[in-house]
Length: 393
Ligand SMILES: *Cc1c(COP(=O)(O)O)cnc(C)c1O
Image 1 (cartoon, protein in one colour):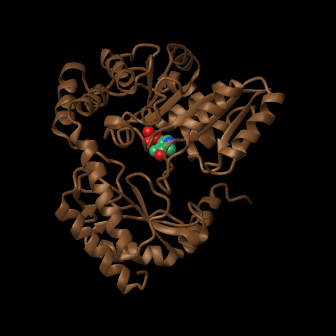
Image 2 (cartoon, rainbow, N blue to C red):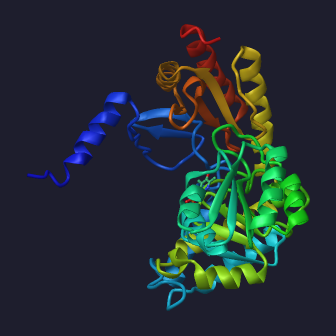
Image 3 (cartoon, rainbow, N blue to C red):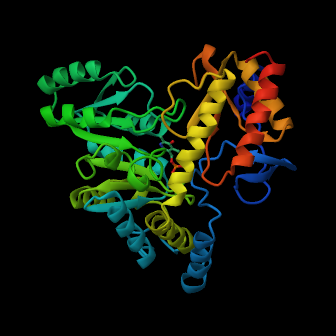
């Protein structure tokens, strides 16, 4: 007799045995530079809330006001009866901020990738991806009948060859890549990719989830960073990271928006954001336009923290952004370092195989604009003490 759902228990037990299961921590209160996790007061070093906007008074006020004026829910999907004035205003703000003709907001960044990518290429076309692209891109690509090719991580020589080959064989060519890579914090050569793509008439799609609000002047993202804002066919991003709210977005031409909203099933068939979310999104963009200090603080903190870790003897890899990996090698060492720093009041989780190579286990720290110099010194003290105890440094 079959045990219809027995596989769930056995596979879960297998994950636990290998130490690959997620042990969920509980955040009690707001995501903030100093917060409470599992009942313990800690310095937060692993949220994506780079600019500390999720708890910004202006965003909270905007969200509360929108509940009073528009209610708690939107009542529908956007194509039917759930298209609020607040959604439209937030989209206009995104386009203005990113220097594109237009923008479209999806429920999440994952929904943007899974809903739009499959509509951009099909049978007879090819999608070319960086080897280390995010899982949501991979899932989007899997939903198409297009052929696929992968180039080695940030290897422009290889991309050029793949493009030349694709140019002979395929109708449409789509190059899709992360902008900032979330495990190492390195930045894609997007200027070079755009140039190579232009030479063969390929479409470009960049997932700027970790770049928006972080890189480029005033945090305007990867297009602005490389001086090619408005040239990339699709600049995709998220409100769930530096912008401090939730929601996916794509910025580009009006043609992109017209096409995307009529074709993406994730957009068409899923309820729209509640008013409080849309209002907080709009306010996040306004805060970025009016308060440049957040991006500046983020980078000042990043430079200080990274330099101090490196001078202690830690390996921070190829990071060029506030994502600062502390690479220690073996999985059990990374776990031990994370456990010990947590005891010392610092919250940063280990990232181990299969998310990174077996010998490149790490703690991934993410800098935050709201951390003070005292917070950083305290966190660095914990890394120094734990690193010496564990003979990592
Ligand atoms: C976080 C992330 C996403 C998903 O964004 P959500 O809005 O949180 O769904 C997509 N791509 C990359 C590279 C990410 O880091």
